[in-house]
Image (cartoon, rainbow over all chains, first blue to last red; front, side, top):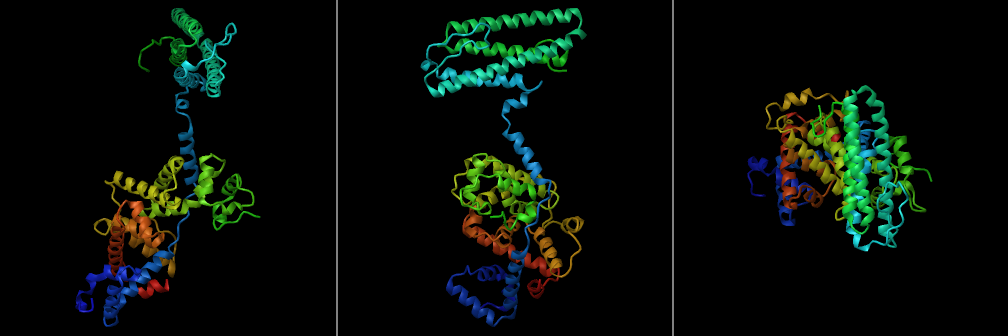
Amino acid sequence: MATRDPQDCRQSTTTLSAFVDGDLPATEAQAVRAHASACPRCTISIAELAAMVTAARRLERPEPPPSLWPAVEGAMARHDRPWWMSLRLFGGGALAGAAAVSVVALGLASWRTHRAAPAAVAPGAALAVVTVSADPLLAEAEAEFARAATTYERSIEKLRALLAREEPRWSPVERARCEERLAQLDEAIASSRELAHRTPGDSVGNEQLFAAYQQKITFLAEAVHRGGTFREGEPPR
Amino acid sequence: MAVKSPHTTMVGVSAVRAIEGLLVPAGATRAALDDAELIAAVKRSDPGSREALYHRYKRRVYGLALRIVGPSDAEEVAQEAFIRIFRGLPKFRGDAALSTWIYRLAVNAALSHRTRRAGARLPTVDDPQADRTIEAQPAAEPVQGDAVLRARLERALVRLPTGYRTVIVLHDVEGLEHEEIASILSCHVGTSKSQLHKARARLREILAAEGITASALESG
């Protein structure tokens, strides 16, 4: 450094920057110091770099616009919402219940070997298999299952009520076809429930029951939403 | 003890309320909640904990976004950064300081944004549109004296290539150490240093071209 032609000093700005930061090894820093004492250009460069760093340190952190937090909060609220909430169509209960039931079904399936004896099922109860387990984890899952199934049933009731409001606008043929299909779905639910009662230690019955519930909910939701001309399996209009 | 922090006046009522909503260990002042406590509160989903963390880091995140992507996209990038922060926080293990981790996510959000917007380039010193774009940006406010110099320095920073700008903002503006910058940018410490020194050299050229001298900077 000390032997460098002052005309070449512009090439050493990066070295001078390191010198300003104290990043150079002691011997190299000493060489820069010695050179700068005899080189006005480097003296100015060092002063400019130091002043530039000081000025940058004084730059303020700007205040973000007030709209930023609400935007973040809103995005996080959408993120925090369970995935099945995004499926809600009418009041949110139906598909939520279906999804919850499915989740619990999977959990129960994995614990089926630990099941205790099934408790008596009240006539007309929505749940096909509700057991009382000594395993607290399993008991918790069963309670969750019961809550989900209740929600599920309530959702079906709501959809039925909505359908009852819509049906008078349909043609007699459309109404008949709808009721016929609902009867088939109810039959499927009844037979699945019976299967689940017969084989409480096996998850197959429950899985069929959940599938039947879901099918009925899907049908009801589509019928309410799309009207009497709706055909199952048709893409949405 | 009253809630009082350096940011209280800027934070506003809602944030103070949020901080007050935190479950504060007995005997501790709310303002003294350290990062570890705040992380724990967010992980527990304590009411207001996210907002408290937001207010603690909003200026750093927004300032970084502003200086890397420019004023028109800064809010969008800061929003994206905070979403990444809150989504990632449950998995944050504390291997790095919270501030370093937050800077990393903010830088990544900013650089990802720039990559997506590659077609709409921000001005750099190599960009023939640079001066026009800079001039087109809204003036911050009427400035005098040192405020003029700060504004010129900000404009000079915008004209740096992104890589240089990122390093110089992290080191000289935000005051991070090279070890932190290397962690944030996933590079070697030596790379961070060499990039910084090159960035300063380029910045000095830009400032010199605008007639800004060392004495002016010092007086500013």
